[in-house]
Length: 390
Image 1 (tube, helix red, strand yellow):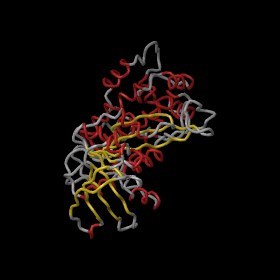
Image 2 (image 1 turned 120 degrees about the vertical axis):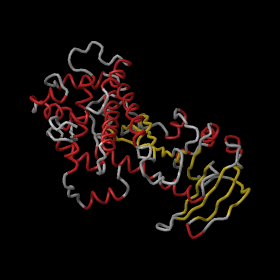
Image 3 (image 1 turned 90 degrees about the horizontal axis):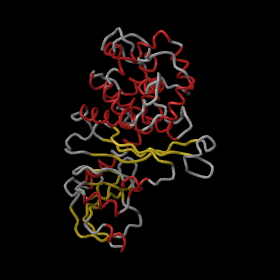
Image 4 (image 1 turned 90 degrees about the vertical axis):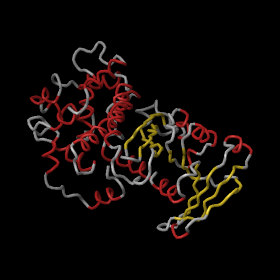
């Protein structure tokens, strides 16, 4: 990266303008636009994410305070707040969704051989879950949730090899998690780790029919019969590894084939877990450990809400909310790509913290991130030790 460029410009220069413009043209994003293009809107939103701006006014004020730098940051002139807000309200959010998909493909290639907790396992392993983003009902009346509260849900599929989001579906808060299985494109040979909220035997059987696998927790009221038991090592926490068949009328109609039931006791907490899977090739301990890795998606949600702006929004319409969430995903992926391409030996947390205060400095990214380590507080270290080493 050229050291004469601003840090923010160096970061955005790794993004393909040609690919972005293709997304814009697909949805006529720049039709009738005279000055403030979709790319400049994206830059404003990305700047707001990186610097953790509280409002659209804050984004505009901060950028216009450095008016002499705007051209070198990629802007054509002074940013007008009303124009920026109007763009958020009217520019199709699918532009940024399409661009995020391009960045997802690029990031996954970079992290394909990344050392991870999946070492020793081949194939694709995903964690699927959703996070609820609370909104004010009087400001966001379109986001149905409860009588006194509005909310949106971000249904997310996380690739456990690299902790990268590969699928994000945004709905209002009333949509049940299991419904996302109807639109999720199942990858043959992949394994999907989900919690009990996704236990719908008909939908799980469709995963089986598409030659994919699932790991989930059994419901307490599940009715079943044992057909065969395999020996297990009780010292590892395993209690049983069984081949079973569902016996309730509806369940066995929805899932007529055999299932595998694994019972495991966590030595640290003493909690007992009963897992269901259609994968008979993994060891029983691998089944338990893969479900434990499902917690990575919870940490990912916590990290995104804590370090990017997806809880306070810079617009009130559904289009503005969806746009901001997708640009937050794009920002996360852009930083992940830079981290891998420049071989930066820092966590995503550290990178974003440094970028937030140096976005308008002139220093090469390699030099910026090779300087002495930051002093991280004990609370931040505790969060990172939970698994937030993205």
